[in-house]
Length: 569
Ligand code: NOJ
Image 1: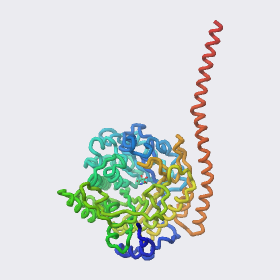
Image 2 (image 1 turned 30 degrees about the vertical axis):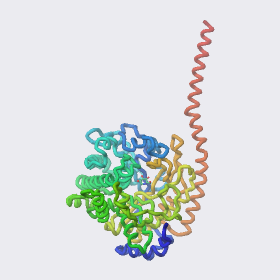
Image 3 (image 1 turned 120 degrees about the horizontal axis):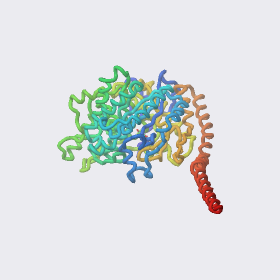
Image 4 (image 1 turned 90 degrees about the horizontal axis):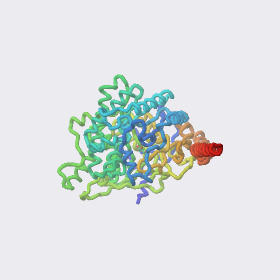
């Protein structure tokens, strides 16, 4: 059970204790009930995001190779209702339409990812480079720039070429470092004259833990207690290598930035008077964001990870820690390899200390000696794991500031989902989430956190990994039953648009008006959507019924003609 003490005034006291290192973030004034009216610094960049496998579709078109997600989703029982990203939003064919949506929002940037097997079908440069795939991204980038939308490009949003998995074991194998570096260099060579923001990896936590520990994600392996640590180790090295490649070969000419995008959910101690809970909450964040950020910004894994995994490994009778180590040369090579930090943040957990005996089956989760809890009062409109806790965002951003030397931050993902069956375009819960999370980010900027941009996740409803299409994160609704995948604006489009055009929240009266206007317009979109079955019906008439009837008519006329001719003879 959650301690009542975990809310309200007690938080303030506990946070004073915990983050006494933060100089200018005054936790005593951190009343998370109040709304802050004000604007963002000039030049703040507003965007929305997507990723290749989740939106492109065209999984086997124009010479694309297979990725681990193509293979994983085609296996039965891996994804909700056995759905796949084979066609998804058909984003591959709808670049112009989607750019029109971005223009409607007046976005400053668009974050998307390149599918490695689309441009290198086997993942290996010397095997084959797919010009058609390159052309797709080339056109997308050019069109974005023509529309004054800055591309922020992720190189790896989880779709590893299948061959690299089959042949080498994917991220379990150190050889990925060089293959990934070759791929990244090809992208710099072809697109670097126009792309100035590069993200090497998106959310490597998920790649490591869900891909190699729990097996919920591709490649679906369950190498408990070591698979995730090994994958992460190679990913960190691959990231550093790509940063150095850019720094040595391309930066002078292209003048861009290379960063990484990390998932960071916030962990808040359940009992603020309990030192053990305070430490457990810190451990939660260190095992999450700190696992990747600490080597990249400070040169090695968080001490607490080394201690806990080392201790458990010894208790399990292992000769060495399951957490791999970096040599001192590697540490200095990795340290300082991110020009900015991408932060993907969605939710918060309460954390309490919980001892797990070492046991025989090791696991990333039990290594942490903690339990995660939620407050049942937190709103959770969509995904099971996603509770709306805006104040956690401000805490996390301040944590990044103090731990990693106030780096330049781009929020690369933030948003909320709704359940599949919900065809409601009047998404007031998303408006609420957006408004409060963006406001906490504004407060963090006032605290001195160096946030330069915000990316709403996501532009469109799309394939949500093992959840298939059952969770919708989009600002735009997609009717997946219709093969044309039409896009409809949800009310949050109107709301986000106003945040963007005002560069923040000007005053209470105006901000309240936004909500009213947004919900007014969405009812007409709802009507359009309701008429959609009719539209698809019409399509069926034109695409199936009409040609069939015509063919039948031609056949009948031919038979009739033959009959007439015979009678004449
Ligand atoms: C993080 C992932 O990067 C993204 O692809 C996904 O859609 C969101 N989490 C929501 O689950």
